[in-house]
Image 1 (cartoon, helix red, strand yellow):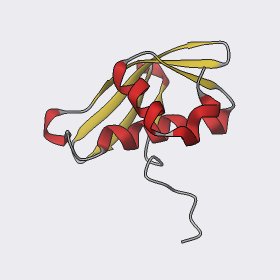
Image 2: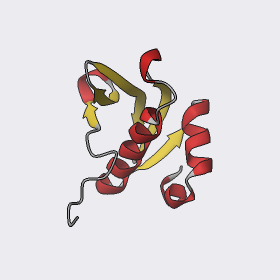
Image 3: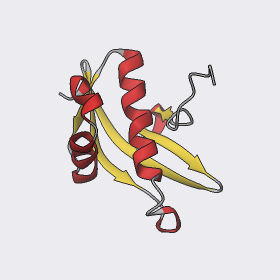
Image 4: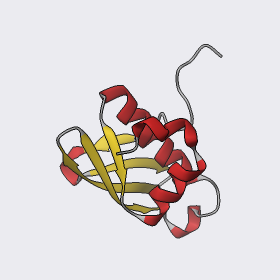
Length: 97
């Protein structure tokens, strides 16, 4: 066990496209964002239709939240999925703007 890699550890910040990405096979789930000082605003979360219902979006958001914790920023969940995720995961309450 001793590894720090969790389910969201494959999430990468694609700053050139202003989105966090989670590759799954040949598909990519993503969370679009805008940045303002100290805050990442999640504006849209999308999972390819073939991957829906398998927890991919939740793994993506977990990675987003872990990234925010590591980098010391808050997350403003603006889209409905991101809002629902933070409601279901009180362990990230301290990161919500």
